[in-house]
Image (cartoon, rainbow, N blue to C red; front, side, top):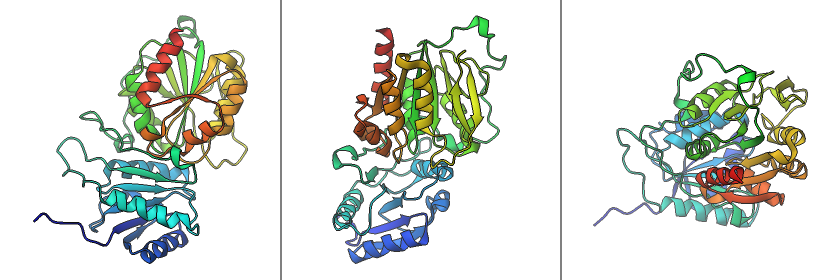
Length: 363
């Protein structure tokens, strides 16, 4: 007879603080779940190598900081277990334990990942639990990457993009961007952006400004990774650069992004303390104020609500707001928050968003 799964559900718990881990462990064990290991968010890189036998990995995102996102992205790529993200959910809520146990049990009943192949690693099953309405939080399995695709966090720190070795053309030789679109993303953003840029039509008269929650040391690495799958040039933003079409400017972590009246990038000292860095809200507001009806925004996978207020500012300036649909997100809190703001006029997969943008620009 075929082997059956043990009756006791086995879970690895990851949370920022010992208090959070203890609370989740007590909740799970009170409902007949065995917690086989507990780890902090800073230990995410080690979790995939743990020799423990488990059925599901439960990650609590309360109090997660931007510098931990790259570790979570790596875990998403490498985890041998299905992953359940738990965001902004009260362990004391009467409905929460039942919902949490049900989702964990459902994931444990999913087919186990195939043995790791020689080229492409097995992909985890991902689901989200959050305070966002149920219709908006059902994340689907992440799409399989193309053969040879690698996680952006796996690139060595000294990797250099080969394109553009002769330097950018003089400003007089290029056309300034007629439209500027802000791309906002957080956890799960890099794989969504790869899909978006991989499907994007070349030659669009658009400049993209990418505000991705990320650790400061990974901005260049992300640019290199996106360059490998994109028909547009991806680069960290620098002061004085003319905003031109066919480029993606990555907003730095420690400075405030703006565009002056001449259409050149300004990087100003960030004097305010920010929960999320870079602030998607601030970038949306700056671009909407400068470009008005020639501005747009797409909010991709991410946790939290950064970007929702900025979407309102950009829409009030005459810009267009779109968002990644919940089913294609690793975690859909950011695009869900944008939708709840009432400004999103279209939602779709990264590929559908790329096609929609091409059609929009043609019009």
